[in-house]
Amino acid sequence: MESGFAGSRTGVRIIGERTAPATGVRRTYAATAAAVVATAVAGARAVDADSPWYRSLDKPPWQPPSWAFGAVWTPLYASLAWAGGRGLTRARGSSRTALAATLGADLVLNAAWNHLFFRRRSPWAGVAGTVLLDVCNVELLRRTAAVDRRAAGALVPYAAWCLFATALNLSLARRNPTRR
Image (cartoon, rainbow, N blue to C red; front, top):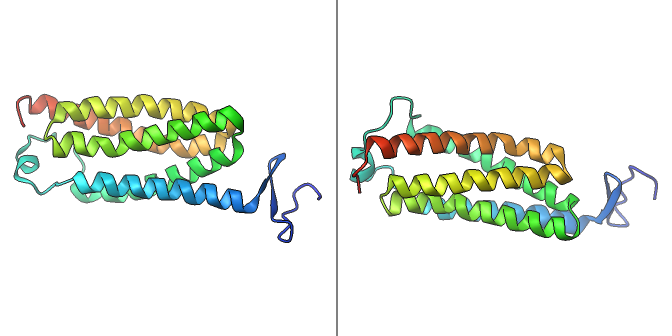
């Protein structure tokens, strides 16, 4: 097989200098997309932005309108699924296992924030959850960059938005110290 050739009969694609079965690549992308969708659904189920508790919170003037969160999270989740799939298709051995575990932990922490903040009605629990997510994002970026810089670059807006969410959550916690 010549370099750069994607043979449809052989079911093999050239990925950089490595080859991988085309079905394995598709499965990896499908798995990361499914995991990200499951994360979004699990997190969204906990959100109740119309609850009397949430509406009564003293919010900072720089908080985006509620419609902006869906508009921002949709492409961020798409880039997270793509970057996860791309990174996992390029990683091998123990680095692939570690990257998959880090991505999984990141997704769990992502969905958990909604439960900590909205279900527990605890801005301070939300702060703890989002700080853990930020730490995990750094590790996810590091592990992804080790196997594919382009995939890591696609994760930067996600990590940046999570940092913004941490600042917003911290502001809410400070402005509402006894709200439960």
